[in-house]
Amino acid sequence: MSGPGGTAPQGRPVYSISAVARMLDVPVATLRTWEDRYGQVVPARNASGHRLFSRDQVEQLAFVRAQMSQGASAADAHRLLAERAETGLPLAPRAARPAHRLLILVAESDPYAAEFEEYFLKTEGFEVQVALGEDAARDAFASAAPAVVIVEVLISGGEGLALCRFFREQDGVAVVVVSAVDVTERAFDAGADAFLCKPLDPLQLVSTVRDLLRSSAFLAR
Image (cartoon, rainbow, N blue to C red; front, top):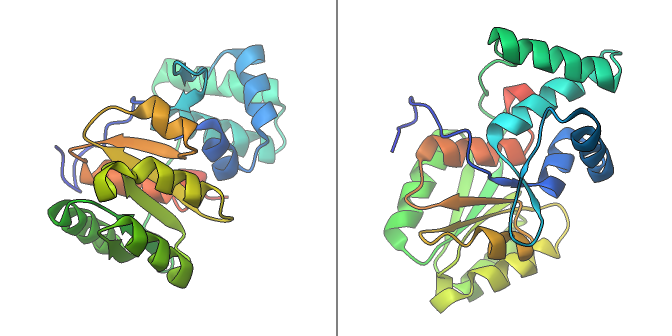
C-alpha cells in the first residue's frame, strides 16, 4: 500500500462510463464513438458488457476533451494523444486539493476501516461523515446531502449493493463501492460510479473521490 506521497495504482479499471461522461461533461454516446472510431482509449468490459475505465484512461480522455475545447477536432485531439503516448510526455499536472470543503459520506461495516478512510479524506480537505449501518447511512444521506458516498459491500450484513442502488436513484451524488472481495461486476450493475478493492490505497481513494467531483487538476477547465 502506498501512502499519500506515493503513487496510486492507475491501470486498474475503476470508473463506469456514465461516471466518466459526467466528469468530462461529454455524452456517453460520444465516448463510445471515440472508442470505435479512433481506438486510442479502449476500456475494459465486465461480464455484463459494461465499459470500465482506469484512471490513466480518464486522464487520456480529459486530454482529448481539453484539446477539443481549444478548437481541435476529435481526430486531431486523438492524434495529439497518440503523439504524447509515443514521446512519454505527461498529459496533465498533478491533482490539486479541492478549493472548498465538500462532504463525503462513508458507509462502512468496520469502524477501523471507516476511521482510516475518514483520516485520509479529511487530510485532503474534505468533510467526512461516517455511518456504521444501513439505516444510519440512509439517515445521514437524507440530512447531510453528501457529494460522494463510499459504500462498503458488507455493511449491515451485506446490504451495500442495495444501498448503492438507493443512492444511485438520488440526484447529484457519486457512489464508490468498496469491498475486500472482487464484486466489480455486481457493483457496476448496482449503479456504482467506481469500485475499489480493499485494502484501500489512500492515494487511490482520495484521487477517486477527487475525480468524481471533477476537482482533479487534470479535469479542471
